[in-house]
Length: 64
Image (cartoon, rainbow, N blue to C red):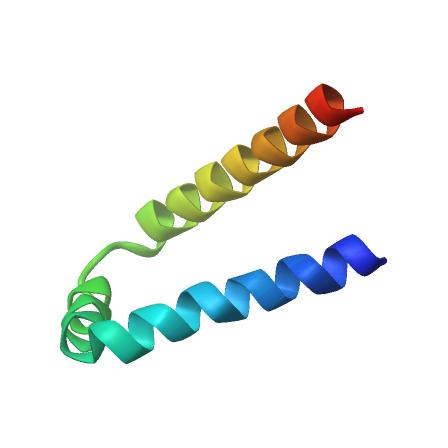
């Protein structure tokens, strides 16, 4: 449970950095994302989740 809370905290840190350093680029990305088909966004989300699971699994298995 502690790892989940730490992971959520890291997500907030990373998102906060993006908002703090490049708010204009983020707004532009959000505008362009409106034009991307839902299926493409969904596929990208699934790919990101799979990569995240793979990274967590690798780190857990390599560090014991």
